[in-house]
Length: 357
Image (tube, rainbow, N blue to C red; front, side, top):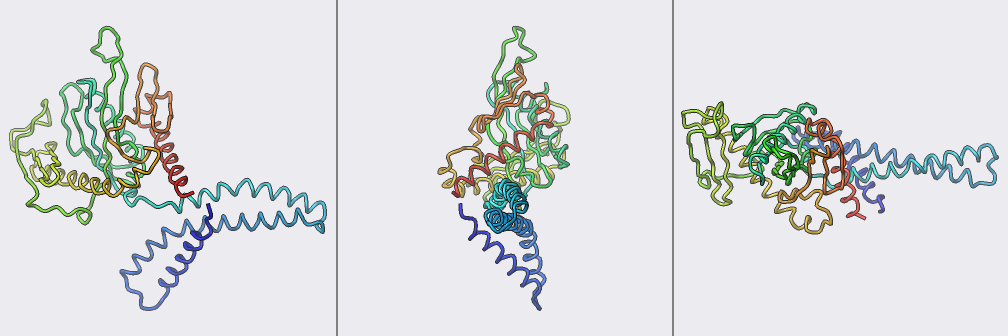
């Protein structure tokens, strides 16, 4: 893979932006836009400079070790330096390659997390609750803000479905590979014979959308208000505060009842609806590219079984990258989840690098 043309384009653009920023009469709006682009290019330029320094050092060391006019001591030092630089070069090249990969513009966004119980009855609902808590704990460890938007429980610890907003730095970039079917294998507390049950829950991680990303026409919405339902407790009240919004063109339905205020529930429902519509647009744009990809790592296919949590064996297995970790308690606490997140990000990067070659 010849990096030279891409490197030259980056360096040229960096110099061009620097020149424009220093030019007289540049307006404030342009300064903001150009400064943002320059800040994004700065680390890439530094990585390119590091790579070029290594390459020139390697060429110089190669010349010295091969030149018969070089004295023996200097030739020995050059030989040592040559092998040292040659070992460092692949990592520097890979760092630059990763920086040059097309970025997902949604990576820096906050997310809407949706967790739903799948097949398996009450055990599936209990597992959905476990997953929801896992992501809440993971968010806390990352210093992200986790806000429950809507929650429908079973009354005995399980969740039919739950939605949360997660706000922080590069949240979507870290969590986007969590979308899909999560399967659990364990002995339910109610199972007297000790038989292992298999059940599932579905996770959706949607990048949060701004008003400018998705245009929603009020006439395309059907908004119903009703009394909050559920198993009891804080999720039930006697006023008509629950809100259901149906987006008529797509049939997407969102319901929020967690707040006592109808206005707050409507605002949360619109937030979720906007994210779902935005994700729908993203999926349509990515469909052609995804069809050409050999792997499903970055597809976000929510019908695909992506991970199995086997409690009797204490293991968690991600089927997309064949990674197994025997620390299920740490994963469920959100402590060891990063092992999977990092591996999935690396696998996606490797796959996209292969596509460029």
